[in-house]
Length: 109
Image (cartoon, rainbow, N blue to C red; front, top):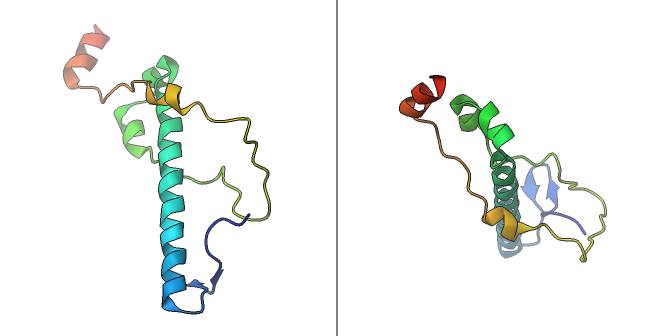
């Protein structure tokens, strides 16, 4: 299975504009799904008090779900349909919000 449309010299491959548009929409859908899963995984990590206490506001502002280093965009890959991400558990996790100056002052005492 290939991920995304085939490109040649940065242009979408396709016989006509309609097939190019379908390829672009498929690519956008794939990107949206990847961002969604990455966001859920980041929330799971950030819900861990160990990480929540280590990250500063600057660190949190630098976080982005637009990473794809864990994705294999070429070749074949096997899907294990018996193993799934536990997205319900991740969705139930509450992630601590940004720190306020008052909370940091009280924590310093």
